[in-house]
Length: 193
Image 1: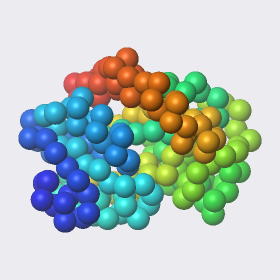
Image 2: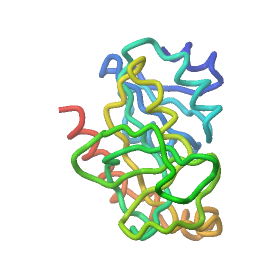
Image 3: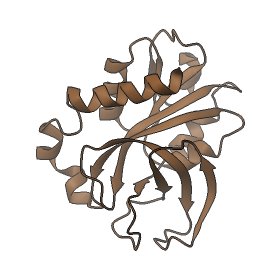
């Protein structure tokens, strides 16, 4: 499976003690933490955005079980919050109007909805807690070719590119500390039971 991921332009690791279960991460910081926290599972670095998801997921063998782990913005959840995604949606036409979404997929009875967009979401009229990313709903589009078991998100910003790129936030451990990733591991273990 690692060879397949490498051909797709992705990077992977792990001996895969859970056959057929793959962890997908969009950016290098997420990928490195996944490799560290899940050394016995296959980890794939996809890259950010729809094109990278398509390139990676189209090469996965049919029936591959996938867990998506990564950062997401939120309209009101605190930076560093770790949560499951309840439902995945795709925003259309770079619209931030929530009546304009597509491709729903229910993932969990707990957590928060995630809205995938082709660019960084910086505003919303949504008042209930929500997550925003650039990959998850494109991964979900590959079902039933793959089985998306769950998505775990770490809130990286409150709809602010400046917060997302802020080195002080990243270096503080809010996104990479053991406490945060222990929560990630606990959620993944719950999914795999």
